[in-house]
Image (cartoon, rainbow, N blue to C red; front, side):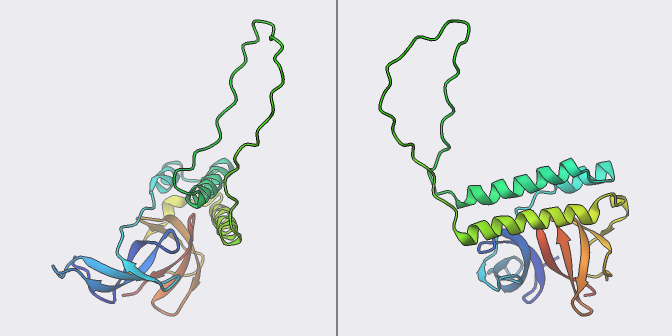
Length: 203
């Protein structure tokens, strides 16, 4: 189905660093592919980039039928690690691990050498720390909302369908989510593992 200016679609936001709902601003010369889009979360405009969100978590959830506390903790930790990694400068490498000591032989006394201060990576800014906390909190809330829920009953998302609050929605990019609010007859706010997303409905 060709894209149209003014229609919603999922895309990678270069400012939010997340997959969010965008509005098509302009199309390429072929008149079929999106060229410029606007994020509905931060209102920033940029060239269209395909969504990067993996559906592995959603597939694993559908296979088991429920989400365990361990899986929720792992997902939250992964989200924190991804945000921290993005904040590191290019070329930064983690500190080397200390050498393994062979305990089969008695250690040989060595002369003490002057210690050098190891280079410490840059600290996260307040905005980066706040973003990391927000991602972790969103993942935790998502897990609490779906804990013990029968995920096989989640409805597949479509802009043509309508959804109500507290209903489970299965999105092709964001996985299984929980409808937390409606914004009129054509928009809903859904809590996914990656955070709250604004989606279109009834169109």
